[in-house]
Image 1 (cartoon, rainbow, N blue to C red):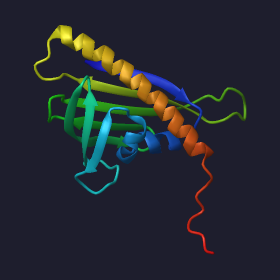
Image 2 (cartoon, rainbow, N blue to C red; image 1 turned 180 degrees about the vertical axis):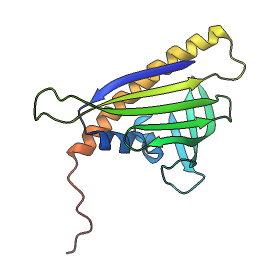
Image 3 (cartoon, rainbow, N blue to C red; image 1 turned 120 degrees about the horizontal axis):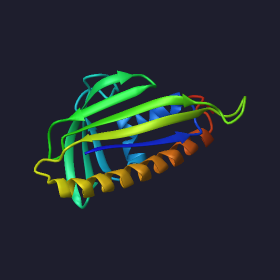
Image 4 (tube, rainbow, N blue to C red; image 1 turned 30 degrees about the vertical axis):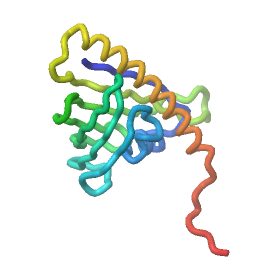
Length: 162
């Protein structure tokens, strides 16, 4: 199974990468993620390990991802070899040309999941691939809403005093 979905967001690349590439934000936009727990310091750096619990196709899946490649604001690759679903997830971000000169920042993003569930037949693999693609598209639409909320939120100017 190797599934990639791509979209464009009306948001600057650093914001898209900061939210999409932060495991602590995963439950906000991944519909199937139920919990996230860092095994290492909660930093998005190569070698960091994060436990996820997810629900997919009616099953609960628990797995640990390790960040294996990181180019800030460009690419993040996480891999898991444990659990029933060994997988590699790759996030890639790039600048899109604005609709017009001086228009809003636009960011392209691809989300790729590649792997093969243990003991999966070719027939079942097709059903999982379709389910995965559908879920990934929905997740990117949820991410679109999270990004809009982030852009609409008032700036955090730090602590205030009364």
